[in-house]
Image 1 (cartoon, rainbow, N blue to C red):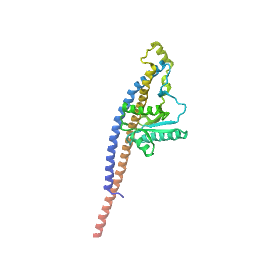
Image 2: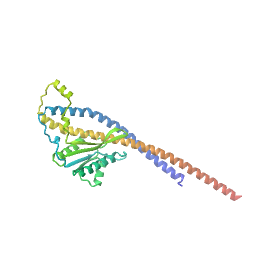
Image 3: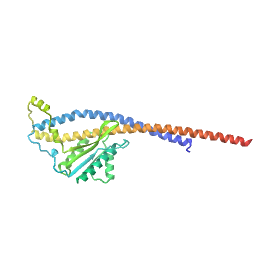
Image 4: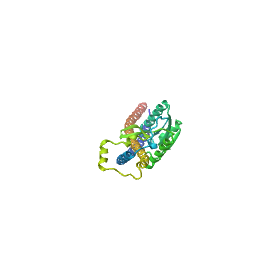
Length: 295
């Protein structure tokens, strides 16, 4: 049986670990609030961007742009799993990579070639360990992604698509639902769906009431400039969702770790008290046995 000193050392070690997990939980909670605010602030911009593209698309006589090209045969697909740069977040990274590898097997089963774009250190290390060739790697911003990070990813994705290296680009990431729930999402970002050029009848009536617009330059040229920005916005939104999901997953994981550490401390304290009682009892028996030997 372990001695009292052994139990004291273990209790001290677990308490120090609990201090770390509590600190990480508080930091993740603060970052989560900021991430939620950034997602909320982006929504009006994304909605306005969609409305603007739809309005310009209605004015364009014909729309034939590379990012809208729906290819008849899909031979290559680029997968971009959005993971974190760190661990200690439960199944956050594992569930994204698990879905991405399942999607890879399904695509290869259909005879399609798969290219990989790693976003996040955890994803890059896993893909490198499994000897997957990377068409791009982006790390160092998973906690607080900036718009310039989304621009870099969007530029590489558009390059792969427009040059014909791939016929589709798919993001795999965690959508933030709540600190306890993150939903793995697959989003096709290229080609851009032609549905964004369509609007409902109510919006068309509103446009008719406002009258016709005069576009300078031509609507097709404006649309050619807007679509890359739309792609960047979609990727930026996915990065923010992934960041919020990571903070929520880490906060929950660290809270559970702190709770488990507290329960372990209680168990070790009880075992230490039993060990102390056993030592005291043994000492009393030794004293009694020594006194009887002297009689």
